[in-house]
Length: 326
Image 1: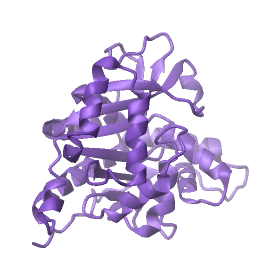
Image 2 (image 1 turned 90 degrees about the horizontal axis):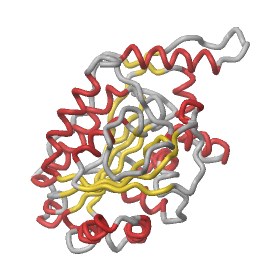
Image 3 (image 1 turned 30 degrees about the vertical axis):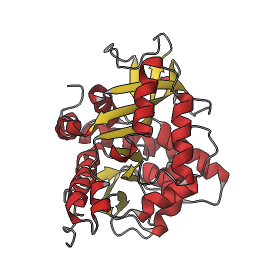
């Protein structure tokens, strides 16, 4: 059965993206200099707290002004950028790999093999680029990998061992072992990374794309084994958050305003909907902005039931569409 056509057009309204933010983000797609890798790590690990076009535009204008040189030819203000969704392809390797540099903290693991799995699975997976751009830079991507299907790959074996090592919570470890062991074939590793200041309006269609593709794959893949490999019952997510230093670490949000800042806005919804979760200390020193000096970066692992996906999609759209400071 042929696959259903994938819809790539986004909202035709152009989204603002400053010259500074675009240039900084494109650093993540260049693999030749260590300094550029460090800059991309900062981009990925800085929490995105923006909501609404006004906040995006103002913030990016400020960033652009701060980064401009005295050269009178430098462009000031913001530019309009048309983002588009694409199937992953081999040429995306370096861009995706740089976005994943800190995915497992400072662990030395088969990251290249992990990126290869993501790019080889074109049935379910999306990368975000600027339409018509010659630099082919990647601003975000999302994919879902079946842990059971890929369990014999070195990168997945190392990832599962890492999760078991960092989980120190007795009330969670047995659930984690179950999903990584007996029920691994029911589990999708939901992998998503963005550059700093990615317009949040892209998030609802980005997640709509991946969850729609998962649904289509259960019907359109050529073999029964492949179709069943996308019948996920759970998703596991690995991310980061920032806890205020006065806050005692807990595995669930405590509801106290500003005690927890999520590295990605969608993670707050996933966390609320999770069946279980745990935090873990990060060993790698992350570069954080001054406003986060009183916060401690921590890792976050969550398990979310596939039956929560529709609720997540609805709440994410409401979050992004809500006015700033509402």
